[in-house]
Image 1: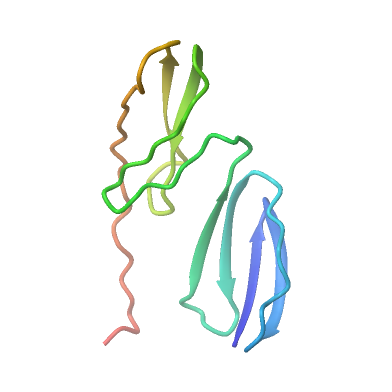
Image 2: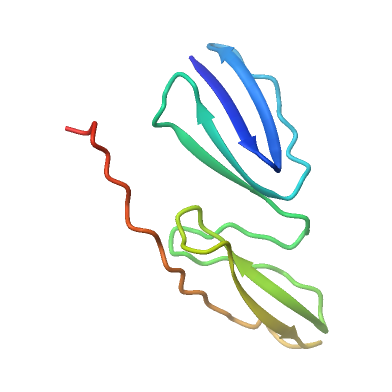
Length: 120
């Protein structure tokens, strides 16, 4: 059983207690970070990052992502992780017409792991 909620500016909602059936869908149509919690399970937390661009990717297990950008464009590429210090990391990239992909990399600084006083 779960009772999921969010007080995030990008999406505020309160999904009442449910179990055994699919919950009603939530539409995330405003850019921003949505933090989800559960009123039944206090330690449950999830993050949803909503972006207003068709150019996005999630990294694989090795931390690599590929984004097909339009040719001959100057773009700003942002990286985000729920546990990083700061809001986002950004780099400007010039995509040249006819060139293969331009590799970029980010080194994100993470917050120290939270300790759980209730853990054995």
